[in-house]
Amino acid sequence: MLMVVLGTFSVSAQDIDKSQPYEMMQKVADRTFMRLAKEQALVQSDPNYLKVVVEEELMPYVNDRYAALKLLGPNLKGAKREDVLEFAKAFREYLVTSYAQVLTQYTGQEIQFGPRPIIDDKTTITGVRVTILDSPRPNINLEFKLRKDKKTGDWKAFDMIAEGISLLSSKQSEWNSKIRQEGIVSVAKELEALSQASIRFEGKSGQ
Image (cartoon, rainbow, N blue to C red; front, side):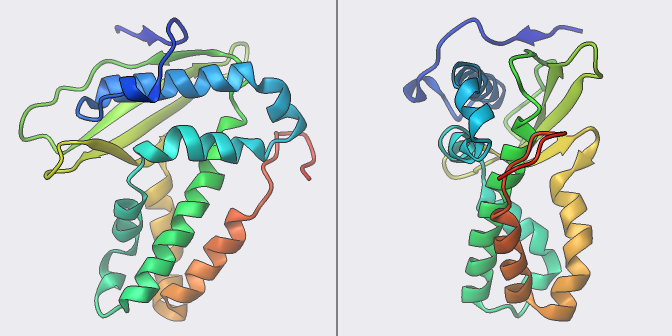
């Protein structure tokens, strides 16, 4: 299987074309992991700095609004607009913390991309696989699901699948009943609290 290895070129924000999902994810990942490698001392001394990295390097390419609405699903029916907006804002903050926690697993390992997905004019959803080679430990397998904006033609990620588990689907199952019982605002408050959690490296105590 053909794999593409990162870390061989420098990328600026102006170089990233959102109309090409595979190339976009390669360049975003390359830029993100190169920054992590360069600033690893800062990350190790202050793990919460990973939230800054996620906010600056990843979130411009994440469709957090679509993800929040997809998570709410049938709970959108009859919901107040301001409640939905509050939930979407809280969910975005939760995503930043969740992605930052995942990035604690990167400490300079080699990054490889899976094969280029087949995309035609009718494709609106696709996946891009990324593997963190972590020998002698098991590799870390991620897949980013992306959606194409029909108006702009830009692609953005809306879900991350880590070791076969979809962040979006798992949280949808977890929160749907709670939303029905307690309401959207209550779950939004819970998400806000979760997003404030400190980032921790495995086996280390956080701040």
